[in-house]
Image 1 (cartoon, rainbow, N blue to C red):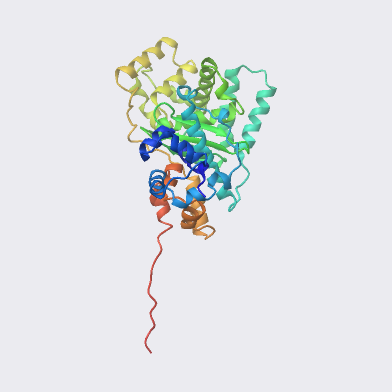
Image 2: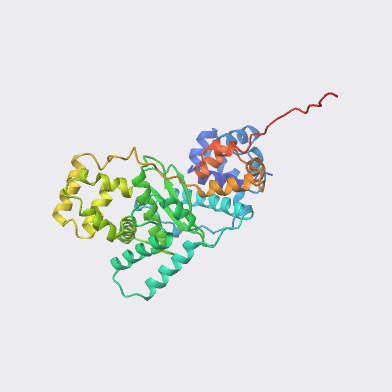
Length: 391
């Protein structure tokens, strides 16, 4: 029997309206509604079209999908996802990304039944931050700075580099994924109701500096804004929350004591090109370096305006020097877990994809951002002939 909810889940995750999907299939919008509500079932030719559109097996529409089997309803709270302000009030986009997170949560849960993770340090860090924020009388800017210092210390990040940033965030217990998000989002993050933290990074026009700031920005949300209902904030409140995450990111990426020492070697404070060596060292943008210098009072307001004007004049607000040269950090945690499980024979990747999930490899690429060849390497079956040695 056709399961309409499976179609609804796929459609929403892929960001299609019923009208858009009906146009793709050559049927009416009402027909899609009827399929999704189990009033009627699509014919086999339409099932074939759906399998091509969503990269799933035909049986996907006749058995319980991953959301029904590997996660619990409501584990991804839509109101608590930290989106950029441009899309916070876009219902279709937030629903699509929430559904994507639900599928990722299903994958993490699926793998969790086969492997035990160590104690999640990110939860301990979050609770430390919550205890501090609840007890302190410090001003908010001091709270943010102290939280950034604590996070850098607890994650084990060196005081003079950000080269291991993604690895250490993933190691702490955060699951990081990437997908094409577009310029209006950039990245987002959330805690599930079962205390699993996710960060989703965009990979359009990515650079090492931009990616590092996005990661630090989302880490700030995870630590400073736990349980904040973003969808209930007005634009002014949301802008304030975003500014706090930005303040956290700059303080986290550029620790004050070391950065102040670095700035002593910058003789032309308003010239962005003078910051090239610091950009290479910290893998942060010139814009963030200037922002941090201004925040610490190293660049007074007028000089910071001149610095920013120079960035604009040189075209650095669109693309900075070294953006195409610095190595971009890529998520590795889920790949490492899958690799360990596959190599040890705990899971069969072909069975996971084709039987347990009832999908194609491209579905997992769309879901996780992991290149298809990563999965294919575990699905290549070696064939051999049996020979009998003559006596």
